[in-house]
Amino acid sequence: MTGPQPPSSGPSSTHPARYAVGMFGTSIPINMIKGSIVLFYVDMLGLDVRLYGIVMVAYAIIDAIDNPVLGFLSDRTRTRWGRRRPWLLVGAPVLALGTIALFTVPESLDGAGLVVWFATFAILCEAADSMINANYGALLPELFPQESRRAVANALRQGFQLLALVVSLALTPWLTTSVFGTEETTEGFTITAILYGVLACAVILYMTLGVREDPRAVHAPRTPFLPTVRAILTNPRFWQIGVVSACYLSAMGLVLTGVQLYVRYSLGLEVAYALYLQGVVILATVGFLAVWAKVVRVKGAPFTWRLSLVLLTLGFVPLYLAHDLITAILAGLCLGVGYGGMLASNDLVIARVLDEDTAVHGAHREGIFLAAFGFFGRLSGAVAGVALASLGALFGYYSGDDPGGQAGTAWRVYVCVYPMVLAGLGAVLSLLIQVPTNHREHPRL
Image (cartoon, rainbow, N blue to C red; front, top):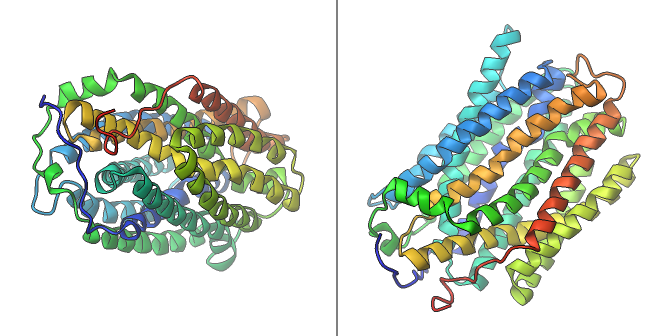
């Protein structure tokens, strides 16, 4: 382990917008998967929720293994193109092809064959997404060490993420069920996945080719695997902030995976109407994000983070009480207030943990550290699997072929009650922990 080194200033040649646009590409395919996978496999293809839950648990276990491994390999990569860029160049086409395959199921598949197809390509997409985001996220603290400039870059990339959500969540129900297909057919999902995959790959490649990594980080000594893992696992900040982040991401993961079926069963509308609910909420969140970015600059990321979690928790109450499209949209706007705050602050809080590790240990291991944090985020898949499986036991909803008599209540609980409990837990925990200072900006603190 080397001694502490001066903080890296990061290369000034990388424009925040060029870096931020990458979030648009990384978000499109993975959010189509999160937003439509339950509708596609469970409600349309008839995959039993219990089998879905088993696959998601396996997904989380594999993710727990590949995330730190991919991050570690990224930190140790030394090429003339940098540490992160080669992985991004490989991950982009793999994610695109995996997404297309996931939504292109041969008509002859059912039973065990359908489960195997789903598991194979869901896990492939997970691995590609882990590869991309471990490297993309690790660039944020390296390229933008000052929190004021980092906040700008983060706000821009979260804005691009919201734009991607408009495309991959709000437009998807309309494209898949009204433009390229119908409420009962799957062809629309295949065509939409192809469009999203090509667009995402092009954007990620454009971003990657415009990033200029810090040469001091590229030439830093390689850190060994086991001591690095030990340092992460024994760091209390990792567990404290990681668990809070997991609560937030799992809560929003449930909303993303269930909103289309909430519209179908809880509101009694066609899935295509999810366009209006998701579209209005996401576009409004863009405005909230701009306000929260100012709050970050004035009050700091930790204050914004804690307040946003409280508001996010309260936002699920009106969503539970909504009974038609108009009241659901109004409720969604309330939810968007807290969501915008978390988009503006959560990654900044995590970046401070990476800064502290670099300042204290003098090792540039942002990739493995962020990949380890990514495990908490990807726990949302396992949480969604368990929550979905519970709908069968509690409400009799097992699939679109066997929805039971309480499907409306089931999806209201899935989209509103479960997320509210998770966000509330995160809010309480956030008030009990200490967030580190920005050690790149204030190295002597």
